[in-house]
Each structure stands twice: as C-alpha cells, then as structure tokens.
Amino acid sequence: MAFELETLLEFCVKAGASDMHLQEGKPPVYRVNGNLIWQQSVPPLENRDMVRFLDKLLTDDTRRKAFAQKGSADIGYSVPGSGRFRLNVFRQLSGISMVARHIPTKIPDFNGLNLPPRCARSATNGAGWCW
Image 1: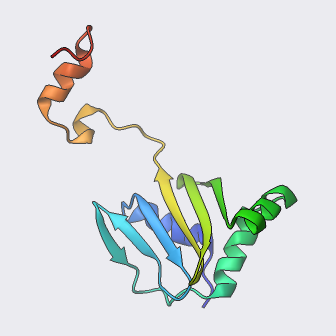
Image 2: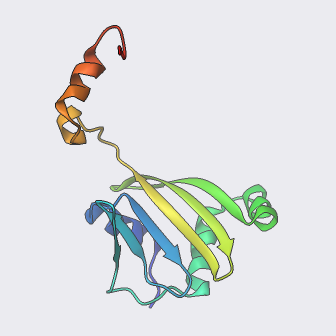
C-alpha cells in the first residue's frame, strides 16, 4: 500500500509530533512529547516508497546531483493546511531515511512554552541576564 509523503506529514501535525522519522523497512515513527511512537496502521516503508518521496523533494538536477554525491540533503517543504517542514534526507546502511521537523506557523505565547515563571522575569528584564 503506497502512502503519500503529504499524508504522513499531515498525520505528524495531527498527532502533535515535533518530528517524523522514515526509514526503509520500518513504519513511520513520530516524536510526541519526547516519546517515539510507531504508526502501526502503516506497513513498513519500502525502497520504492522512499525513492518516490525523494523524487518529490529533490525537484531539480542540482539537488539530485548533490544528494548523489554527498548522500544527504536538507530541504524545506510545505504542505498546504499543515505548515512547513524541515527535512533531512540521507543514505545509511539500511537504505534511504529521512527526518522531518514540523515548523509551527503559530508561535506560542510564553505560557504555551511551559517554562518556569522566573524565565518570564528574565525575558522582560531590560538589562538582560544579570547574575
């Protein structure tokens, strides 16, 4: 069963994941609140899946040649309705792999960062960090 890269990235956002890990021979893995969660509903990705994803991401000859020479590439990618992602695609012994980091479009306010209150005082201190 073939899955589209956009579908997997959309699931990443819906699951509240910060990262998605794709590797040949394994189902997608998502990092949610620091924990790795395997997407059980998707069969292990095959080489043809990863090659198809690469073809979608490496859109010009310059990027394709760079990936062929270096074995890795860093790419920015947008999915309408889901936001932007920073992807690192690379070759390893097990085949082609990639990691996608979701870049939220909404910047959280201070409370949404779950930081200690004294960090708020430091952030608003006009003199910066004073010890």
